[in-house]
Structures are given as structure tokens and as C-alpha cells.
Length: 75
Figure (cartoon, rainbow, N blue to C red):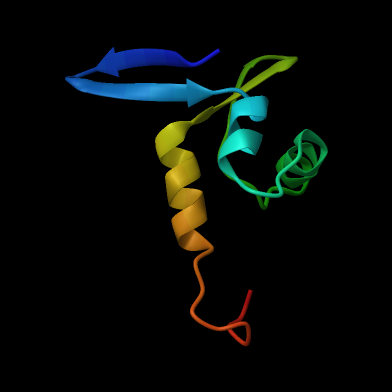
């Protein structure tokens, strides 16, 4: 389920972990959970103790930050 909110004229789309996995090739729910635990994944919002959502814009920024031009580039 995609949820949208509008704040100050800006509409934000919130994605479930399953939707994030659909957007990122090779991403699984388990890997996304591990990245949350380690703190090296995309920023997330903990709505309730058992519910996590991601801003679509945060996923875009996360992917942009991991863009590389060489396999020799530092991780």
C-alpha cells in the first residue's frame, strides 16, 4: 500500500519494505532489515514498533549516493 501525504504543497509518497524491494533489483526484505539494523540502508520511518515505511525521495537519494563510475571506487 502506497501512502501519500501533502505538506506545504509537497506530496510525499511512503513505501512499504515490499515496495522498496520491487524498486531495487536484488533487494530482499531480509537484506533491507539487515541494512536497517546495521544503519547502512536507506533512511526509514518507524511508524509503530512493527511498522516501517520509507519515503520514496529517500530511496531515490540513497540510490543516487551509491552510484559509482568504477568498480575500483571506494565503497
